[in-house]
Length: 126
Image (cartoon, rainbow, N blue to C red; front, side, top):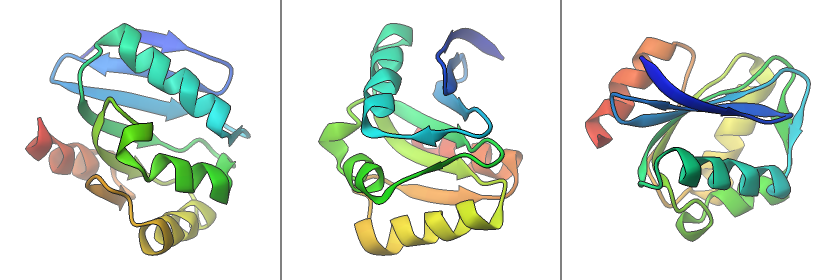
C-alpha cells in the first residue's frame, strides 16, 4: 500500500508503508542528473531514510551515460539502500546490463521483467 507520493514532470515517487520507495519514470522522458536531484529531494521529503528503491521505467524512457555514472556512486544517492529496476523494453535491458558491467553500482542493483520478483528481491534489504 502506498501512503504518500510526490509527482514531478518526469516521475512519481511514492513511499510504500512496507518500507521502500517506488519510483515510476513516466513514458517518453530522458532522465538527467538534474532529475536525480529532484528524486533525492522527493525521497528526503517522503521519508528521509535510506531505504530500498523500486524503479519502473516508463515506455520509451531512457537516460544517458553521465547520469548512469552519477547514480552508481552511493554518496550521490543518499536515500537508496538498493535498487530493483523493472524494465519494459529491450533497450532498457541493454542499458541496465551496460550500467551493471561498466559503472558497477556501489549498492545492490538488479534488473527484473516482473514487478513481484523485484519486490521480493528488494524486501531482503528492508
